[in-house]
Length: 508
Image (cartoon, rainbow, N blue to C red):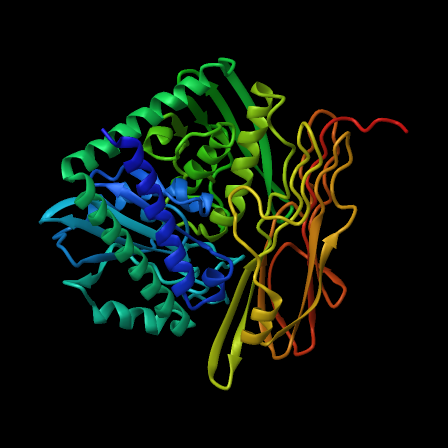
């Protein structure tokens, strides 16, 4: 059987879907930063193949797709379904999902699915990631699973709903069309795969891929030291430090138990279960070499969380920052626990914040909205310094080129450089963060959602912490989580954390 060829072909289908989505999108956040993810799933919702896109999206597919499939009704060829409810899809409102059924000769084989971060989905602040939100309803428009396309035609009522609620509908509708086209390519390519290998062999190939991946992952984990490994880390919420605690049980599988984590808060740092799962599975996946990432891998990772906590909140708790900030801390704490089991393989903590910058306003009666995450320093490794000025862990996006941003938005960049000396000292140094400065040309509302502004990323084996983040407006220091109004000519500067150091620094 050609299961391995079918496997590689299906992975490439997901990758090609991503290329199409990037090239077709209108917003710089997707077209330039590639803030999107694509996958092929089977009829039961198992991940068959995914592209190497955004980790926080990809792991959440395993949770979200099964939720979506349980809500589908009257699935027919030519349909497509839209959703962004985090308690269904598994991330946050900005991640708008599109799922398209794959029918071959009237038989449903599976689905093409993608998520793309829309720069604004409504709500009171630009970018829709509201630092002061206490409920989901203060973050933007909540879309349950609805039919976006019927018999190949867009459902006008859904399109009108988006036009009237998303603050930059020309970008949003353009991106949504790109998502539809991306899935259409996925459907077409799977049909070509079936034409070449036959329906039965294609489905058997998918089953064999998942089964072999599961066995391969277990074989690679068999050398991991059995036992329980605990760690804790913290998120910053005003003057309060929110504990995230994990107990990793390594056996035939890996079980991550987050019992003892802080209760959910009246704020946006709550993370839905899909985010918690994706962050945990990402850290574990990072310790494995040369294994496909599909249901075969995910079946080896179990997550336990108490309902009503920071990592499994009850609806309608706000969750916009859970996707971007809490996800990073979950990855950090799982890495810290893994460092006790695999001390020669785990790096020190990286910058640990996506440093979300949201800007927007009205010019000549038309709303504009800008969103970006800013990279930072990676943690030092057991065998070398950490890279500087990179996106790490749950982000994996690019930056927005200054030329593109200045052409499309009323902002001028005043500085963009490496934050030298921000990495933690050690035998190996943590990577340095980034300094990025913006000057606004018109009155602008700005929101910042960042973390690691009080306590920098941890080092390992005697390495020192990286420097914490810093946010200033016209030189005046600001909190890392804030919404404020800027006048024309005001300057915002963000300085991202450096990574932690590894090992004790030797005396020269």
